Amino acid sequence: MKFNQDLSWHKRASESECLPWQHDLQGVATHEFGHVFGLDHVGQATGQVMRPSSPNCDTSNRHLSMRNKIETNDQNNHLL
Ligand SMILES: [Zn+2]
Image 1: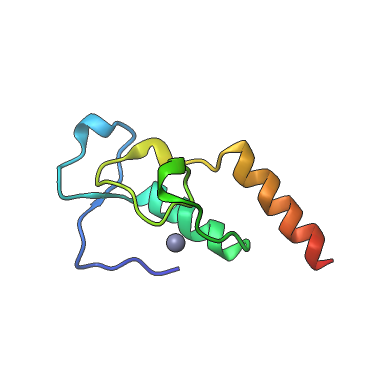
Image 2: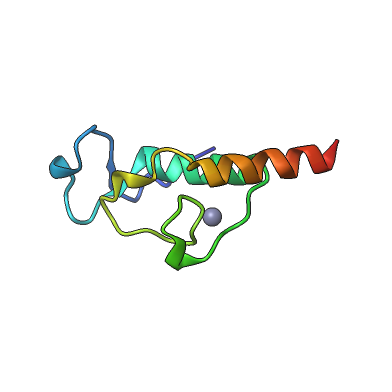
């Protein structure tokens, strides 16, 4: 996985330290790893990690939800 060096990445634990134009590195990495493990996008309104986009400085996407985990397991079991 390679991150665009032209973008500004938020790498700290606290959302309050994020600058308005920064993208949350851990949240973006979690989303992209979801794709690596076979997850597709979910509806934007779900608010889940796998939605197509999230606002800058949003640190709520750093962990997959239980629903995402169940979907990942279902997809992996389907491949076996
Ligand atoms: Zn995506």
